[in-house]
Image 1 (spheres, rainbow, N blue to C red):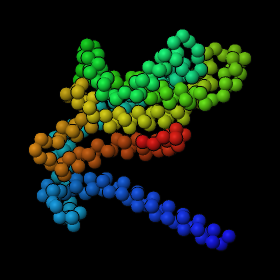
Image 2: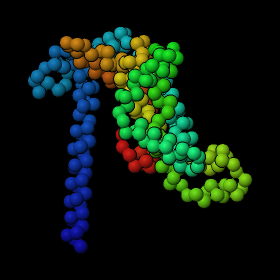
Image 3: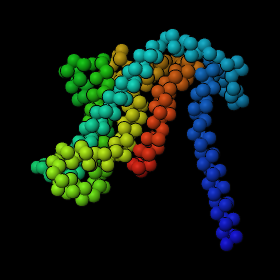
Image 4: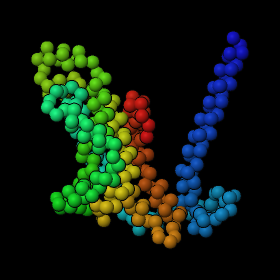
Length: 277
């Protein structure tokens, strides 16, 4: 018994050591970004492995970046992109997921097969059709153009469908006996019980929208989110790494703020969905 306890203690210590090492490894790029943002160009491109901390902490990189880039507008565009895609994705996926999970209608299996097919092909295939649609509507270089690819989501439809299918059918039968129609059953009974799936979908959608780079560069020239603005800072032959890292550090602020505000929902959504970012 004593040897078993010692073995469990050693296993626990080993697991904690591994987790600590992995955590430190994941933090290294972020720490390197912060340190580089306060360095000079010479220090940031030095091949000396012992030059880790800047000799003098420079704040001019942040001042230059803020003066050259309209960060308030970039923050607004990014938050509008995230909020628009999250609202549209959760709304459409909740309705479509319930229909595919609980309702019977002609062509149901064929339509859901089309949804699954969209999940299996690369998203880059839809860029040209989406661009032609946005161009024909005359909304290029607008906030709506940024949100347009996220109006519907095949992944969200599948995720919410699975959430609704996990709920017992007795709830719907009881609601029907109480006189509820389909709309009332969905709105007051089923949708609140699928809240964890909606939260998980909102988290995934927010992260994917924040990281989206190709579509904003294609459809917009002036109304750009943070990801596209940072990509335009990279030169063809040389890069100002301290300014680029300073801009990247400023670009992390929206997601850090959102995580601090919705930390509980983030953890619950990831835990209940069984997925990972």
